[in-house]
Amino acid sequence: MAIKRPKGTEDHLPAGSPKLTLDVSAQAHGWVVETARRVLERAGAQRIDTPLFEEADLVKRGVGGSTDIVRKEMFTVYYFGDHGGYILRPEGTASIVRAFLQNGLKQLPSPLKLWTHGPMFRAERQQRGRLRQFHQVDYEVLGGSDALVDAEAIALMVGVVRELGLTGVRVKLGSIGDPEDREAYNTYLRDLFTPHLERLSDDSRDRLTRNPMRILDSKSEDDQTLIAQLNVKPMLDFLGEDARANFDAVQGYLRDWGVEFDVDPSIVRGLDYYRRTAWELHHEGVGAKSALGGGGRYDGLAEQIGAQAVPGIGWAFGVERLLIALEAEGHPLPAQAGPVVYVAALEDSLVPAAAAAALASRTSVRAEFAYRALKPGNAFRDAERRGALFAGLIGSEEAAAGTVQLKNLRSAEQFTVLLSDLPDFLAAQEQAHLDPTLNSPAHPASPVILENE
Ligand code: AMP
Image (tube, rainbow, N blue to C red; front, side, top):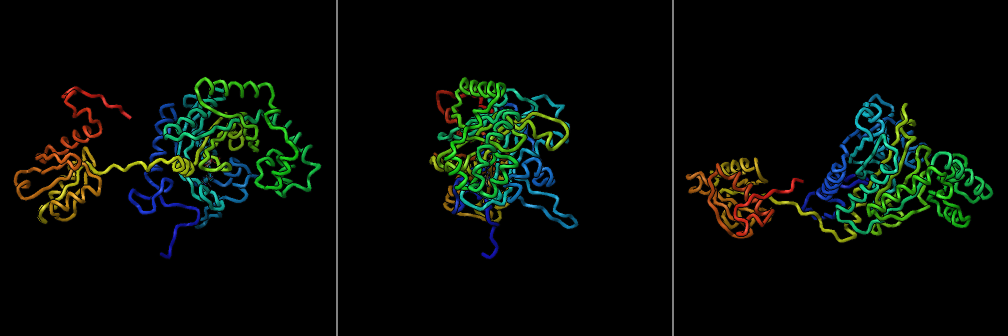
C-alpha cells in the first residue's frame, strides 16, 4: 500500500484485527480511559476538554522555552492566511490552566479537580513507547495547596493503575522545595559545575547559566558520568523548613492510606513554576528510563501564562505506556462483547423483517442481523463468529405468526418469542447471563439490585 500512517503514530484497531496487541487496541485504550474516569469521578473530578491546538505562546510559557519539547518537538499548525502561531498541544496542563483562567472557573468550589484525556503531540524520535502522537490521561487540581491535595493526587494516580490490575508499579517521590530552596540549590550546582565547564555538553553549558538544575535531567552520557563523579548532593538536602514539613506530611498521608512509594532524591523539575511535590510512576515492563507517568505541583504556572496566581498540582500518564506495562504483566485484551442477538431470515423476502427485529431489539440490547437470507446452520455459525448469545431465525412460519425463533448458543435452549416481546425478553436474558444467580432455582424471583457502575 502506497500511503502509510505518519511516523510515530498508531492506528487503534478494532477487536479481531490480525495485528492487534494491547497498545494498539481501540477497545483497550477505551477501557483505560473508562477506568480512569470511574476512579477520578468517584473522587469528584470533573471532565474538561480543551482544543488540540493552542497559541504557541501558551505552549512556550506553559511548558518552558528551554525544554526539549519547545525547542525541538513542537508541531506547528499552519493554515491559509496564518503564520504558524498555533502548536499542537504537547501536554495537557497548560491548556487546562488557561481554560481555568479564561472561563472564570475560580468561582467553582475550590479546590477544583479536573480530568481529561486525549492525544498529545511531540516530534520525538520514534521508539517503542515513544510516539509522536500519544495519549494521556490527565488530572489537575486547581486552587488547593495543602499536602492533603498532593497526597490525594498521588493516591488517585495509583488508584487508577491498581483498578486496571497493574501490580509492578513504583512511585518515586521527591520534592523540589520552595523557590528560595531551589535558588540555593542552583547556586550550589553552579559553583559545583563551573570548574568542569569543558566537560559539560553544549546544552548543559547553556543550562548552567539559565537553570543549573536541568543539567541533572540531561540525556547526555558524558554529563551523567560527570554528575556521578561529582557526587552531587540531592535537592532534598536543600529543602527549607516549610517545604520539609510539607514533604513529611505528604509521606505521612500516603503511609496512612497504604500507598507505597520510594523517596527518590533524583526527581527534579527544572522549570521555575514547579514547587514542592514531584513524582514519577515507574514499571519494569516499560524500562527504567521511561516513566508510566509523572506529576507535580506547579503553583507558579498560572502566573506564568495569565494574570492571577492559582496553586495547582497535576499528573498525566501515557495510555500507550500503561498498555505496554499491562502486556508485560500478561494481561489479556479486554473482551469485546458480542451482540445479544444475531437475527437471520431464512428467505430473501424476509430479510427486511430480520433487520426490523434487530433494530427494534436495539432499544434494549446489542443486536445485529444478516444482510441476506441464510440457512439455519450458516446463521448459527455466523452468530457464533460474532460472539452472539442468541441466534434468531425468521422463516415463513415465524413471519406469519409475528414471532422469532431464538436459540441460546451457549445452552442450546430454544424459545419462540413474539416480536413485540423481543426487546424485553432479550434484556432479561442478558441480565441473567451477566448474573447467573438470577437463573438459579435458589433465587426464583427475588429482586436483585445490580451495582450501578
Ligand atoms: P510528561 O508530560 O513528559 O511528564 O509525560 C507524562 C507521560 O506521558 C510519560 O510518563 C509517558 O507515559 C507519556 N509520554 C510522554 N511522551 C511520550 C511519547 N513521546 N510517547 C508516548 N508516551 C509519552
